Length: 233
Image 1 (tube, rainbow, N blue to C red):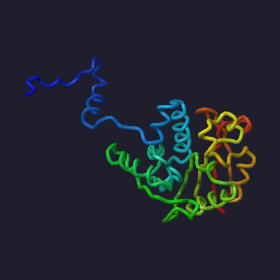
Image 2: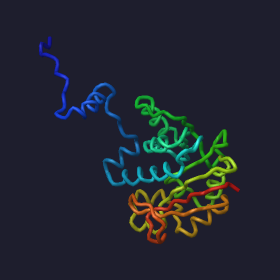
Image 3: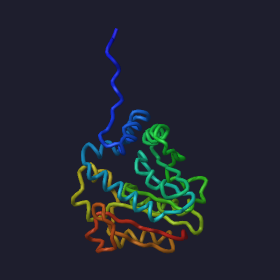
Image 4: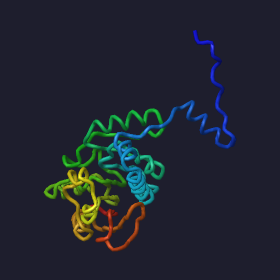
């Protein structure tokens, strides 16, 4: 029989932080998702850059109603967008990552609708979304299917819908890891990236990104490209 007295409730030296200790004790410590866990372990800066991309999306789509994410993976960054819009439907073609996302959502208070869906098979049902976004997916789509990918995102939207589609640039691949290169089968330079989007949207605004900084600078020096697309054709 253990006769030791129970440990006293830990108290912080600065009372304004006590609620954080209490939250950790009552609700537990939030965990990373499958993909974000790997990034945090192997390259913490990489997780920062991914979250910065989600922040850009959140600000561009702020105030939108029904928003769909195409290729959410573990949906770790999705909550940044949830803070700015009315609702998010997070989709991915891989049920393993979505199962992980759902498990975490059920315990951390950031639930959203999730759907296993392959965007290459058709628009996201039921369609009629006010906005869409897709980060780090385009580069995994072979060139022969890139128009199907963008077209089905466009067809998931209302006539006045907007989309943000982000991808590493062609120039970034000189510095990419071998693991990244294995999956990156369709990185493009800025001009070609814009042309793909313009086939499916009336207006396309191109942004560059280096590390966590978004700008309108010289695209051949950009590590990452954002296409802000408006008005599906």
